[in-house]
Length: 199
Image 1 (cartoon, rainbow, N blue to C red):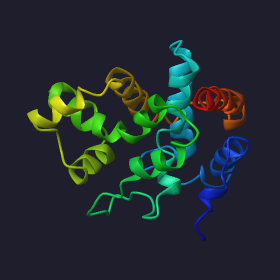
Image 2: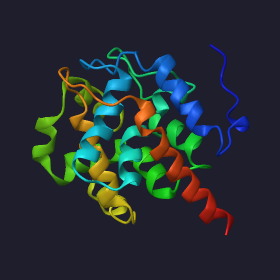
Image 3: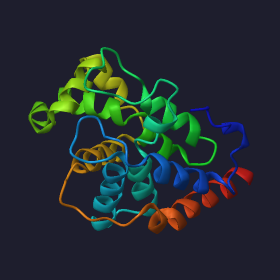
């Protein structure tokens, strides 16, 4: 599969690009979980919307794992022995078009898992088998120094919130809206960011 030309992306076609990813690759297995990649991300957005979150958080929950599709290193499998850094790959594609709050939620949702395992030990018991395996590859619970540094991020509350929506999106018995339902919302977040950046 050839690597997409990310330089050709613009505020006018980024949503269509994301929709195409969901359409073409959304049916791929999600990390040993009982849902597909698309189901996982759409469930995260569903839970965020049902909780009355603002659109920016719903969009962050929807796109948090997009790096599994854009990483040059491929998707995580249960046989992996090293991390594939999907969170950085996703943020790198999105950062030209989305506000920092969204890209921070994408870039640091793995760090949020490590943070929660250190700051709230009971959180570790709620992780799935696949999430525990990936935690080991991602460095395990944070050290106290890492916790203190992570908490300096001005978006830490939102990052942790999206992490919880990430954890929730693993249900086999759920019907969600398709990506097309969220596409206008994603475009509004992109347009608002680009207008502000142009001021």
